[in-house]
Length: 120
Length: 120
Image (cartoon, rainbow over the protein chains, first blue to last red):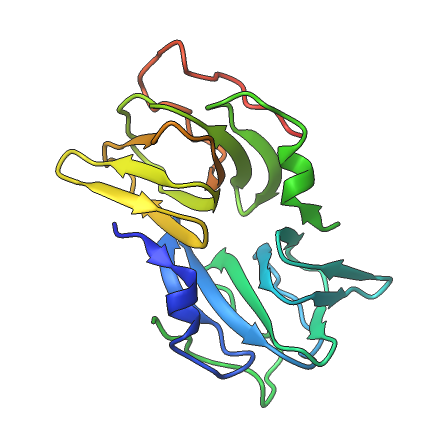
């Protein structure tokens, strides 16, 4: 029940596409991620995901369009919807909120997939 | 499935202590609130609440201490814990995430209590 300073947490890791858990509420985790380049296409069968952009510009590809999200903007990706987050070469800082059951890349196993996400 | 710009949403209302719903995920609402002055003491029996400070400084009183939260900081208030949010006279902009079942001031009815929170 302490405040959590996002910048201090971001300073604790450098890896890309490796979400770190910083808080928990109502069966969900709050996570921070630094991302750069392109993730793989994936979906989460039962979990909605909230993306909050803290720094940089995130491009979220859907099969029919791309949504561009900057600092101070948020996006909900509903369960079951295929998506591919990517950046335009820059490092982007994200805050994510999703159920604890959420698998990193859904049912797809890939070299980018992180099996066990850690707390920081 | 569009991006939501928080500043644009904040510009749509001026009332204090009147959270507005801007998104929904996993049975929870994402809300924005402008707050100033002092809320009443209350708790939520079954719901954890996430506070994300966007602008200004929020003081969260607990019965045994006060947590100070600024921009770029977050706080989870666990279910059942009595709390009283307040500001130091300034207007503070918050983003909240909490279950759809969450009552504004828990089981307490007060003139500040908002029964039906609206979408913007």
